[in-house]
Length: 197
Image 1 (spheres, rainbow, N blue to C red):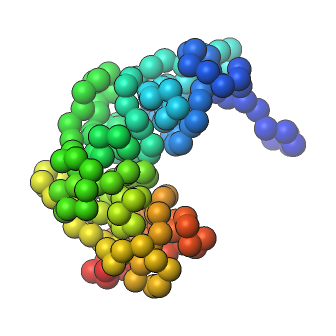
Image 2 (cartoon, rainbow, N blue to C red):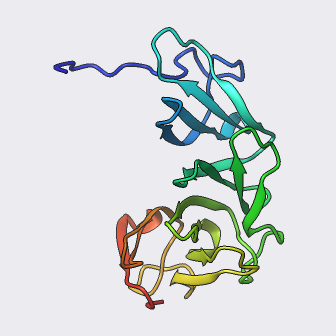
């Protein structure tokens, strides 16, 4: 340790769509099994994997033609990726290009089976998917296999009261099912206990 400067570990070759470039990144995770970064490269409409081994100078496309924003990985190494254009979250096995819809996928809207610009996601041990439903100003919970979600945070329309969110982004759910959400346009982090709305 002792370094005072950061180190470029992916990209760093200017904005662009070559495999050694990245453009408008929105999320990243570490795949410990392959010792690599998995990156939402929203500007290039793809999810890429970039090895953390020194000497790596380009990424590998895992999934193309996707307006990805958020991603997470469960304990069985399935990737969950939100798509802001298709208004859905899909689950992918590494190497799978199509995936399976686990939230949304019924067009843009505010119905319980719809999302509107899904951003960040969280998946718990039961494979329950939590989604920051950005333009609906709410957080949705989709139980495994469900055809519609449950509003677990907000749902009262955009605003700044304690019952409202404004363009939610990052989220985390603890073991008591308490939802913590980055309420981006209100410049605050909100906590929603299980059962609260």
